[in-house]
Length: 271
Image (cartoon, one colour):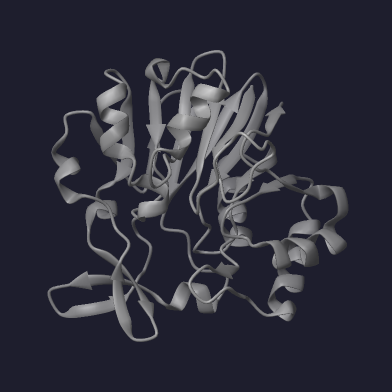
């Protein structure tokens, strides 16, 4: 299988665009898929430069209902006429972030939920023998970056419970890989749940949500170091990106060594 970062906060090449967002291209014997789409045209522009034809993508999985992972959905549906988009129904509910007391909308266009190309996933969904999604992971990290994220209900604003977040287990060519968008529930808990479904997961791709882009603050060194020690116990390589943040990555890298890699836009991994 081949995994390539299309959109991310950093880039491996000067000619590729960067954005606060995430989009990962996945190619297996059965699929050309995207895990997340990013917030704008960045993934599309980079894909063209990387000679990846997004019109040929057959499957999209959107990890959760935040704009930096799925706001480009409208554009994608216009350039690709065949792919099904697998997403939690809750992802189209209104989501906000609290920035110094001001509620800023960070959700998706709810009108797109009406598209016939949308497939709502359950708490666990077997798409086929390669693709499996699961949700409702119990929170394993109590972070500041999680606490400022909200959802809007009839009663007002409430702290987000992330029922709209899903993760992907990809199994192909005898290998099992985990993809997570922002790991709002905590990457350690997500991986523990994933291993109950597939005990042979050897690679993890995704952000760890340890950095707040609004305040440019990183979670405490104590928490970041604890997480790194926790992940080090697994026989797994972690390819992180996006919302982990450079400071947290550097701290974790000192503890995890080669078990932790950073995946910028344009970088590819062959498994």
